[in-house]
Image 1 (cartoon, rainbow, N blue to C red):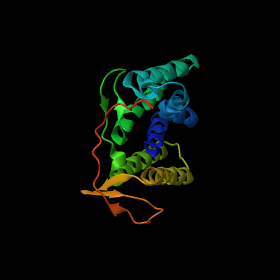
Image 2: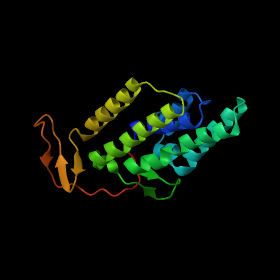
Image 3: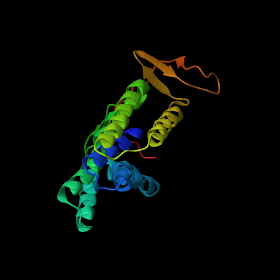
Image 4: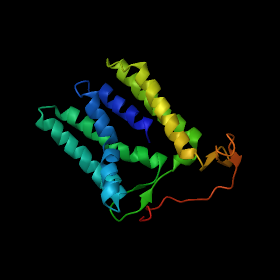
Length: 196
């Protein structure tokens, strides 16, 4: 999930105006920010950045950080919740570990671009509207930038890849044709990443 996490951060800002939007954005994207350096250093980086326990731990640390800065308990809880909501959001779009040695879960909606755009768009616009109604207007340009980033992200994912629209499977090779071609999709159940 990309733009959807931004929407979750906006919901957090609408819930607690005393939380800085920059800190809420860090909370919303923290597992992804942790994954980047881990992917360069260890094999099981996804488990250490995206399992339920690690995401909950990150949320707890953020909440404690806010309390140590003199923030309220409610704001700390909202900050922690924004971070923890990263896991179910990613389970919708992909496949994520539950525990260090437990099963992986995911709906892998990235294979269904229309579903993904609808859910992430709803989170993004819903968070934007909620924050505005609660007195924190986020400029429309940020909304447009997030939608553009999401579309660019999805285009990069589907470039030379298979996906599903409705009940039909497609593959897109823009070097050969800008029009996606019918394809028989390989079924890939949600499972742990193979070591590289």
